[in-house]
Length: 449
Image (tube, rainbow, N blue to C red; front, side, top):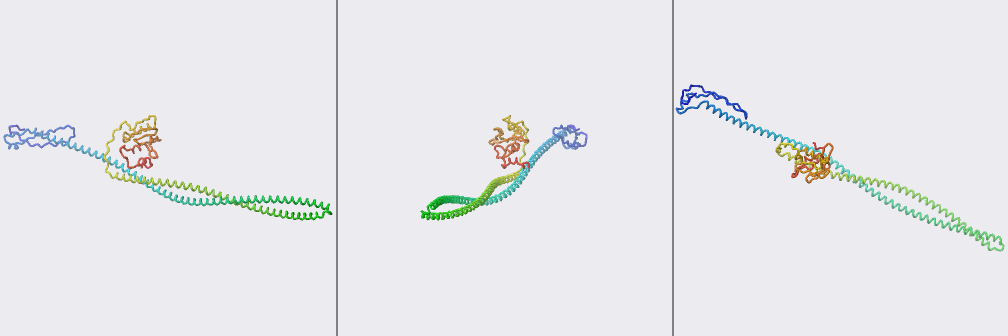
């Protein structure tokens, strides 16, 4: 060792510095290595003069080693902090990347589902268009048939009018025939009365002639003039008898002719009545057929009108779906959204509290909303207004209990599960989704595609 005032220290070799200390973790105690004493050779101190005296080698070595170790410790701590910051940044970036990938996968699944739905709707639209074309062709055929049936009905009505006119003519002819028959009977009766009068007069003349003959026989000698009268009466009686015979023969001829005419008229009347009955039956059958055809034409027109309305609604739905696909493509082109914050711990609270504990539907509704978590209604206030009747803000909502599915909410013409309805809710100030049929898609059989 060297003394402060002398240069008589023994010569020794230079000892190299110790190896660098190992890397230590943060918080680990530091143990400094014990180094050998460094001795400065005398030839190095000869040119320094009488006023310089070197320090003790052990103190110099310890101070330099402590400074080096402190510097290394600071550097190690800085490196450890830097590595930790890099690891945390890498982990956060990895989490953001995973969340963005999950969101992108969900959006791709949603887009794929909507594309499949659009394809199904296009196929359905094609089928509906084919059905509409068939319905239009059927409607044209029905219209042509209806026009033909109307023409046939007009012809039938004309035939009815002609048949009625013929019936009236036949009725007038029957009345005239009855009138002629009555007149003929009256004439025959008058003729019979006249013949009876004539026969009575002939009988009286015969009686008178017989009386005169008796008187003439009695008074033949004295009454010659009466004989002439008797002859005249006989001649007149013979003429009257001839007239009676002629009248009787004419009457029998007239009776036979009248009977033949009456039989002929009756036969014509029977044949015309039979033909009229057959025509009436055929007309009634054709009228029934026309009524059935008119009813079928009316039903075809109603079906055509309903198919046209359904085609218009499907066209509007297709336009809305095309707009929705464009909106989804634009949404897909957007940059990935910011990572969502970690979920908050569940709290035993609910967005809805049952106001009617005796109502099973109200209790089930509170339980399901509690199971969906706080904030599932997205700031909307749900209140009960009556049995199965609720109000969400200004909107009326109808609910019911479904078998095996819990509470169901009426949307459009059907009911969907409460979870699907809550998922489609929007905040009070939000305009909601661009898809007005999103809630209806939840009740569709293709909603799980």
